Image (cartoon, rainbow, N blue to C red; front, side):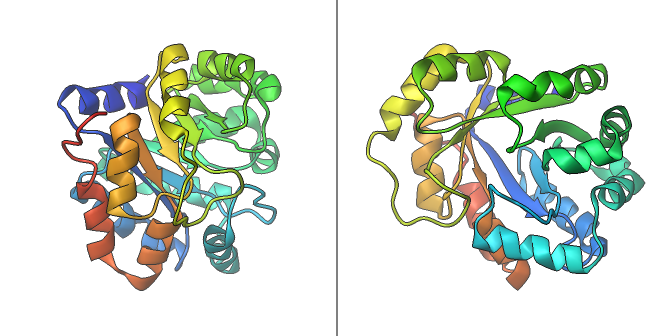
Length: 259
């Protein structure tokens, strides 16, 4: 699939993947196009598009508030896909949608997969959908070439890790903290061993996410994983239009020394 191929091409040239998370419609839906175009101009590998939802169980305070601002602008899954489709020809990086199961079911699974692909979506993350329920979405996503990304938590037992690794498409989303998204100052000490186990059982790239918020974090996690996803820090910087911080995070993923 396109998402996995894109990440593997980045790894082949000696860089690591960098995926920023943005909340669609934070600041109004009209901000979506200029934000995506600026991020891809900075050299990001893909862009994770968060869909605002009223019960975002995986989101910490920063992203939750961004979702509330987007909802106040009337942003929905349907009008996000419609907006993306208007400038899909200008998007050169894969988009990865992060949404919850209920909006997809309300949209209609087949219609969602069709419209999402037309909008440039090449990967999907559904944090409230357990692996055992993924067959609900997988056939429609596979038909339209959309990878279904699985999240692996720090507390997943080895047998669970093996199942998630075997099922994940595009990449594995390796959650680096226990809890919701949000900026962290410290991480657990045994993460290098955790990522070694993931690599032993995965045929797709492994990207670290949750809590990563500084260039040092980006370099440290890129050294033990195939790349990183940065959410809350990107969302906070976008609210302030602080592109200097965003640029420093993206550049930290280039030519990382592998441990």
